[in-house]
Image (cartoon, rainbow, N blue to C red; front, side, top):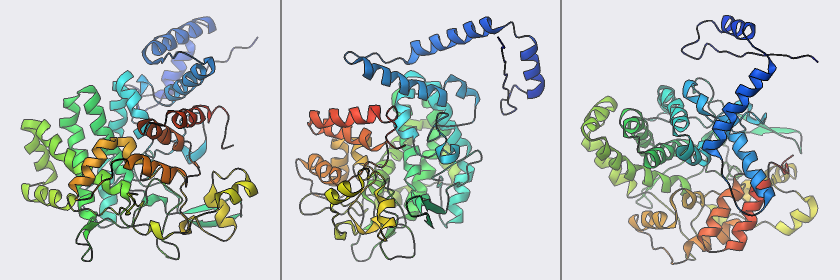
Amino acid sequence: MLDKYVAIFTSRHDDVNDPLAEAKTAIAVNPGFSHVMAKSSKAWQELWEKIDVVIEGSRMDQKLIRLHLYHLMVSASPHNARIDASFTARGLHGEAYRGHIFWDELFILPFYNMHLPETARATLMYRYNRLPKAREYAVQHGYKGAMFPWQSGSDGREETQVVHLNPLSGEWGDDYSSLQRHVSLAIAYNVWEYYHTTGDLEFLKNYGAEMFLDICRFWMDKAQLNPVTGRYSIAGVMGPDEFHEQYHGSTEGGLSDNAYTNIMVVWAVDKAFEILALAGDQADAVKTRLGLDDQELAEWKRISRNLNIIISPEGIISQYDGYFGLKELDWNHYRQKYGNIYRLDRILKAEGKSADEFKVAKQADTLMAFYNLDESEVRLILEELGYNVRPDYLKENLDYYLARTSHGSTLSRVVHALLANMSGDRKLSWELYQDALSSDFNDIQG
């Protein structure tokens, strides 16, 4: 029998000056496999005592829950308190996305906020440490404030590809996904949720507030008055639905007045004033550091109260300005022809068409606002903007968009399952939840 030992050290840890020497020492004093195994087993046992979620019912569901918990722990654990890193899109158990960091913390941090708050804080500090890069990125595009990249790496610059290969057609095409500026809103949301769950006011005062306010400043600078509607519009962005990158026939990427983006911007500005109040005697210091005065804050309030949202007479919130003018797709035809239509965008492009022509979605877009804020808060925001909201508008919007979604992202069913439960459809919620729970285990995307 051959035992092989590997020791890993990195100079990125403040207390490691010579990683090679540290590794050699660790190997030299290694007392043997049984000792290392026992130590590892004890560490995992202590970790499981903190994170385990025990459910009653299906043993398979319990196994799948623990599989996902394991995936989380090998992606970010208490060790992250010493590491300047965050959650990559596929963790350490998948090779896709080149290890880049997107917006996935939004879905993951609630668990860490409750079970491992020190790890949650460390991942937020990853963002804070790259705030200067986010400011540079905003300036490069002509904006004030902080604009975080859609794909972030070690130094915080934009890592998103500019071309994308369609494996069905073998052709390369423009990739506009860096226009998913809503990643900054996810970061702001995560800052608030972390504070709201943990009560870590010290973090909010010293780090979170500065980051949050600079994100709001970016959005308020990006919003422009539309003389036709008399409201402020936000153009040149993509929502979470990556099937829609641009207006069909346009040579430029981006869309106007993505509902999810605009609703979350209103929410963020509202919370900015709440955060300043919570900062107390440190609020002035934060404002001074940012060069933020009361006049600018008043302007934020005025703009955010006049952002444009498009709602049909039937109460459907338009995904973006122009969405209702798109063509409907014959879903049965494509299911019968291709079977797996998760990546409907690639199928359509291979046929010489574009998802930008159709009412199709990769995942929840408009509905993400309900996932983040719940029905009552979205309702309040829309009413404060001056819109009339129908009594059953959550279910109406869920039914509308779910029927037009291919679930090309495994994040999709997670969102729809929660919203189905919120709208009272327990059967649909359970079906979507089961699909989401087993998606990685069954490798539904290949």
